[in-house]
Image (cartoon, rainbow, N blue to C red; front, side):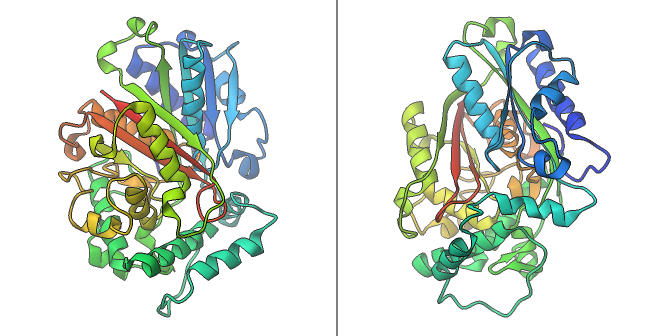
Length: 398
């Protein structure tokens, strides 16, 4: 994984090269060992005009030749989807060594153009109807007078979902501040994070409102960055350093179903998590550490419930108890999460996997989850109905 941040002088090719070369070095592999590659990116097409074959161009430029390269776009879940496809490719015995890459370059001279890409991550034919549904679920929650700022449409989405949760379960803005503060404090120990400044709960609450109840530190930034992973079959593992290997126990991708907004048990991420637990033969209480898709602090609160770490409606109290902090029962987002580590959307899923592999290897330093043996990543993308358009859940083990 590269650092995540603002790198105006770097290109998709530069970022991809850094991540891929680091992944190969970590495995003791060469380019010639790789039999296929899945390349994830979500914004290069609208922002740079590279509408097709981005993976072939990025990887050929660093010396990969002949192998099949597949391009993957699944919004913010693009690179976890690439990992899922690489996993399937190996399990189908189509290749022994497969590369998954996610890269994103979001910062540029035209910020309006950058923020406009988010308008394409929901149904562009149903914008008015979607906005109307979101307004309806957030109605009757008192909103203080506050000025919003520059943001993507997704912060308004998360704000509406947060207000529904408040109305249904009594969660509060302070619950969200607890989570955001925890993640900013975790990221202070992550040298690859976009932000590394600890923040108190009071500082989070006092920050500029983006879309109530979300303040700026509760929201993920735009980011540049890349991450890569090498997947190998059991029979090919003897060619590499087995002591460095982490087992991919489950990789599940789901789309949603028609449901009422209050039917959290039917949520797309709940269904993906249940399928992943079954595939891995584990339960929520077995998970040692997790990285979840906290594009906003509310998203983390909800995911801890959907993943079964706590009951529905208990996410705020669960975080306030210290259960999701380092040293707690199941540390969540020890990397700092998307809120603080950064969110280069096409690279985010593999960035989560990088953190969890680091945790399982016991190499996370001051942010280490002690005794981590089983790890879970949840990565969502886009928006449809009342939830993400795609959900990916990955379970890794030592």
